[in-house]
Length: 71
Length: 209
Image (cartoon, each protein chain N blue to C red):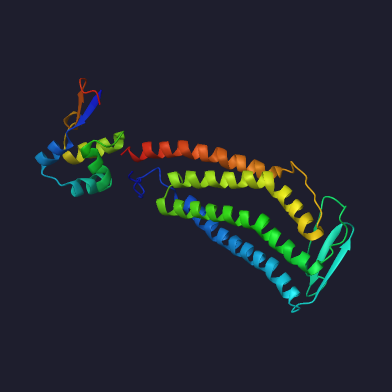
């Protein structure tokens, strides 16, 4: 199973930088960058809530499930 | 590995109270280490001064207890041996020096080394805002091995060396295990395993945003 992150796509659409989003959401740049590159293992609902609030999107816009990807 | 962010929103870094405790403990440890260093200094310096004739010295052996007096009767170090075979020390001045050196190296030095490692753990915890790091786990393991080896061999080595150098006789009692130090060593070993698990938990927490 694989959860694919589409955060960079949504960030580009909303024209918001990493630093700005990190500040608005309340997490560090490092953690947000890890999220973008898919290095994180888990995300709290509170964080997801904050990201969706700031980007004005749905969780499904950021997270995608791909059953064929073995990673 | 990214360390967890240190902000109010992070629920998994050390809280202020724990940080304060660590800071007090670090200061306290520094004090203890200084005291032990002074004790070591005193144990070796005074016999040297006594041998040089710079301080008054006399030796008494009563009730199986050897006492070395310097300065005054109130200021003395002494020890007693498990066996009463040896009697008085033949050469008290040299005996005092050898006793001081043995006591420092076999008793004070391992304790100082262990406390130094503990201080390192505390300093690292304060710096990283978490106690669960690989280096801390390794330090705990080292502490446990020092304590276990000390527990098994310290008493035997101490008494046999004292008998050999002070009384020129052979005395060997084994196993003369120091039980409480052994328990501490085993606890430190268990703690290092717990910290290993803690490191995994910390990694998991760090990778959760």
